[in-house]
Image 1: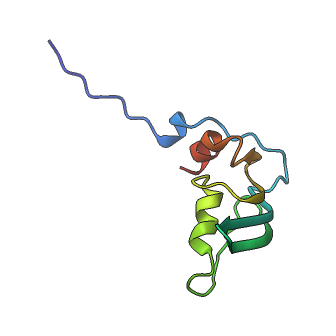
Image 2 (image 1 turned 30 degrees about the vertical axis):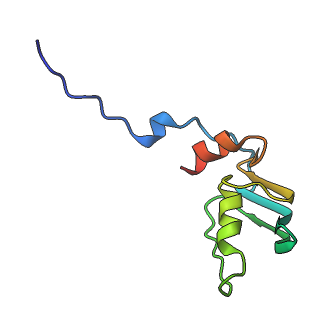
Image 3 (image 1 turned 90 degrees about the vertical axis):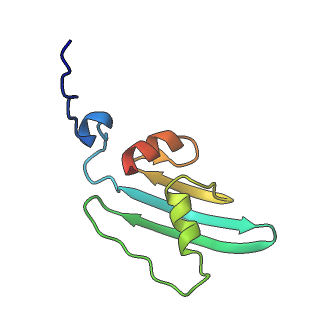
Amino acid sequence: MTLEAPLERGVEDERPPVPRAPGEPAVVVEHLVRRFGGRTILQDISFTVAPSQSFGIAAANGAGKSVLLRLVASLDRPTSGRIAIHGYDTVQRARAVRDRIG
């Protein structure tokens, strides 16, 4: 009986290719609103991030930065508005979004 070393595979092998049209934004956030009960945390946030572009978020404590990142990562659902990552809606295609962002 011989033991062979497991095949080494990179992350690239496990993830499906990202289909995108030339010039299509990597991240699209449109009119995003998130409320917890009667408290509005994010109100009418909109922005796009192009592929290969760095993007930062800076704001005061309690301004909703972590909530925004959870929404973009498809870990939470927005109250209204739309978020798309590489063309995939974070609510309708949450698994596809997570496959692409890691």
